[in-house]
Length: 556
View 1 (cartoon, rainbow, N blue to C red):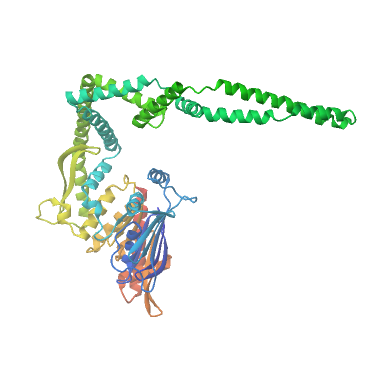
View 2 (cartoon, one colour):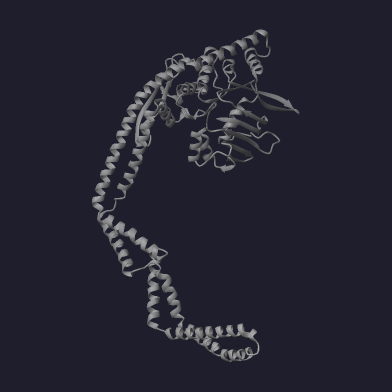
């Protein structure tokens, strides 16, 4: 759920922090205090469009931050999206707004607005005036219908998505068989030539390194022999025998020279061994021009193949295996094509069957959902509402072959039309509330925000709106900006938004109300400027009735 909303230097808000609770959170305040700033700030944090000059006059930037505590399911979905909670299990979404630009972050990681909206869509829905995107998007209409119909339909939708994935793979495989006979012949000849060229070279792993070393040695044989001869002559001039004789003579007079004598004997032996090795190596090293040419040609062949087919011999041999597999495919082209076409047809039939089953189930569910929404709309003050769902067919996809959209006639005598063409902002808010009430048990969105959902209603309708918000609040965190006492009385947690003057400037402040404060604010909503005892008593009675209603609904 949403734990905190922190706002700094946005519009009239200098600095505000709101700690939301579970259940139904209601925000009230007098007209002009800046209640809409709360919703606008949340929308900004979620990647909403920056409208006008929202940075508070005199401030360098505006800042808004949302702190969420996701449950295990949401945390898993966030991880799949590439984001994890911090050490405290929280997700912190923030946006810093500067003149001409903004920076969005999720847990201190800078993200694009696209990524921000992707993550936000898992945590929060905001329904503000003119912000009812869900009801304008046909894909969302389909999602709402499927959620209403429950696990069986969602399982069938998953089966359809899997069938569609199989169909795409089968289609891709079938489309790979597009070569005509001449193209196949050319491709087969080319592959055969490449394989024969590689095979005829008789390549062996590690061969290039050995040949390169050999070629270097053979090609520089003269220089090597000359160097070895010079070394031999230099060593030959070392008269180690005379040194051994002289030290041996001196040792007769001093036994302490014994170790030096022994070392000289070793040096003489090593030197003679080195000279023999040099002589033997030089004798074996012949300058064979034919062998040099043969080795060079072999290296040229290997490097030419590497230039065409890979950077190393191993790459060339791997390329050869890939092309051999391709050649087998070409040789079995006709039979494999028939198999691929059969698999494609089977996948198409399977997908069509899934789409048909899903569509049939949806049409039955659409009738039930439409009736349920009509019942809710009547409760919400619509005199003779009508509601329906229109279907058309589209190309099969992961969500089936149904195009679905809501239709409504919200006033007597009107014909059913697409919902977006007949509903005002206030009416859309009540339609959304009706849908959310119906989906309260199945909708898994943890937090819902409603802004001015009570626009244009009063009396019994306002009471029904309050009761439905309470029903939704039993399974979701609900945050609602309102000006009606019926809705305020239903609050589990009540906040008041006030505008005060500090140092000659208007400042918007937000305060969480205790029980006495909630009664006082409720009395203000009921009585206006003058709060009489009768008004106060009325506020207490309204709150008592609201609480009794809450208790009764929770016992059901």
